[in-house]
Length: 604
Image 1 (cartoon, rainbow, N blue to C red):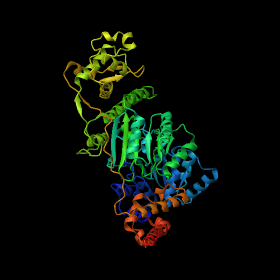
Image 2: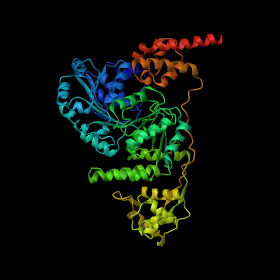
Image 3: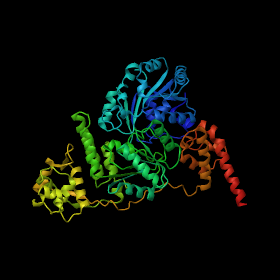
Image 4: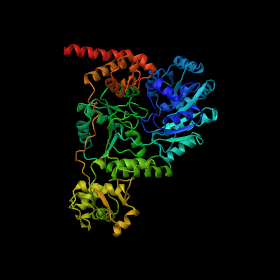
């Protein structure tokens, strides 16, 4: 039997494993269970694909996304793996044919949605088949604390009960300690070996800015840094995704909306265009992105703050899967905080669940407001320590200025207290700045001692003060009414003069240092590079697969550098396995030869 390394080289065309892929694969090949946490783009799929072809029988992959199964299966078939899927998109005859292939041992991998897997008919089918392993992808969906909870995942403990001798591997890119604990309990993985790879994605630059005019801020970001790049923009509401997509179209961008309220055919079309075409921007709710393996997403932008660090990490992780420089950019403001807290308060969750969610929102706020390295804070949340600042986030590249906000904070707290803790930020700022509004006169607030004491600060400076005091827990927001601010116990030492507070000095209009562009190595012949891209595009269109399924950009770059002259040389390029060597080697060798012949004629 071939070893895992031999499968890696002959089937997938890669010379060596990344850590800790080999140990994970050997654990599952030997019949053991595994829980795998590995960052997006870290190579999780190989951890079940290689054991599935190394062990006797078919590997069953439980995947939550029917829309992506076809692309995943197409990619596996490209390298010669016998893969298929069972889901609701198939007619009865097609499904029966695939079921027969499974029973006849004619499949290496079969993708099934959790809803279908838990049906007695499917379990009976599996019982009559030779199963190599069960892979539970996106395993955080099993956790009620997770950010993509799917009730159907709660039934998956049945796998261990019905098939106790078949190894299981659960995989996810994001799970804190609480979520990991629930995954283990709900999937009955108490004896599984745990593999927690590093969470760091050093090629992603994290940048978080105060929201002033979000649309114009986004436009500057795109114009200055990503004018022609593929990217994802996340918004909190369905309506906003459509508004932003339409507005970007008016600005000349290929932008498409994506949310659960759209017709399924429209969603499928927009997702397909994103995967197959260059330079498409998807404007989406969190309904988009899980399982997307497009390698060249150059940016992920958030126009509203995510409610948890897990969500933020998972969503930003969809940028730069190819390891090239990429951006995670976000604009946030006080309204985001209020809106998210209102959503939590109105949810049907238990009080315990709401407390946990509040804790997670506070952690997300903390990431936004910190003045130290964002990457260190992000990694620390997942229990990982990075000794030195990363040098590739906004707070490292442009250290944040702070100021002694003690006096201003006391004024703000006093204004809220003296008005009976019944008013929101805008009215309190009017009071502090001595504005002559109808509301001030109506409640006779011009007679209060705090009236006009804060004239030295501008409106936006006061908004920054209130936002930071809310974020740090000095104020809470009345979620039942109109966003009135209430004092918390934490503010007592500050009001008594026993403590001071340093606030960050917001400067949202400063121009950020741009991330290094994903430029080609200087020694690459640009004309040859474009010729190989054209060759790849034609093949992708013929086979109706995304271009990266044929070859990744890195593989094309290596062709340009090595300039292979025969199949043996072509086969030594990273990403060229035996099947792709046979299938595509002659075509790309011909493209290289034609390029140089054409150039020689033109030079002559």
